[in-house]
Length: 253
Ligand code: SF4
Image (cartoon, rainbow, N blue to C red; front, side, top):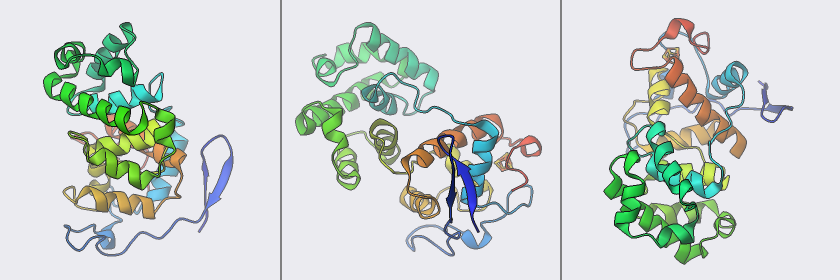
């Protein structure tokens, strides 16, 4: 079956892979695609149809909101365990001092950095994480986002995961939104929506969920970028702790 979807104003055609059967990783709890078809409304959605429906309903989300790729990377680290509103305040402090630059930022002491990013919460820990990330980017890539972008995604991902305080979600945010690499990122909203629809248990490990999405979507940065942003919007508007299924745009899928 062909589905039409719209990414940049043009219609394209894609043959989606069938929903995988059985577990994606035998060491994991089930990614249960044999029952991956029941939402709370009893409908039978699939991964690409959900994307298509959300895109049609909401339109382009223009993620990630930032003035530069380096700002996205800083935001990806600062947003751990806090709201985006708090991250914006911390980034504004850095902007006011013209510090959104790997080399300039690395000249600050940990206490100066902590003080500036204080609104983001856990600021002492995050200052150390930022410092580790800055050491990485300055040492490996001479502080150049462009050099970083030229590296293969698999190598970059392994490098990022070796930096203290960078977990899979943060690494994938940096890769997808900061470097335009084709990798699908998973967050709590993704887990919530798709586990409610029976695709997998909410506690299934990150790599299996990521594989599930990447196996069932075209390998395109624009789609991964847009899909994640659309899921965040859906979770905030409808798939909240107490879901509002009756008015949800994907209730009929
Ligand atoms: S709110 Fe929407 S996404 Fe969440 S369970 Fe209900 S129908 Fe599914």
